[in-house]
Amino acid sequence: MSHHSDEAIPSATSDSFWEPGNYKKTTKRTEDGHKLCNDLMTLIKERSEIEYGYAKNLRQWAKKWEDIIIKGPEYGTTESAWKGVLGEAEKRYDLHMKIKNDLEKDAITKIRNWQKDNYHKNVMHLKEKKEFDEAFKKVRYVVI
Image (cartoon, rainbow, N blue to C red; front, side, top):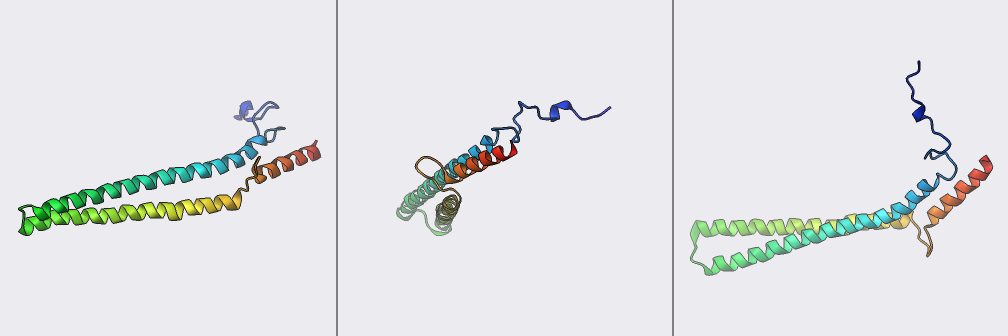
């Protein structure tokens, strides 16, 4: 007795790639790839905005407390400790601004360039999708 299931054998009405017309899922994936690049760039842009907002808030907070410490009665080692906390906030500001800039300049730029190199959009469609559709249709007639 065989341990293979008949369910594993694609039927004529299956979703198998090899069935007539099912290539469209593949060409749709090409179309989706272009959109996914845009979505990924949006995701990264939003993250960079979060990093910028956090960095900006840290800097404002540090400036506010620096003014309070300067005008306040604290002095000596305690004043130095308070200023040390503010110095750490400035370093965090720098770090989060670097993350923001790296995301925008590096990641988004690389994705956008890759998208431009790999997807060529016309008014109506992506050139690559149309080429795939035509190639699959051509092969279908050769096979039939």
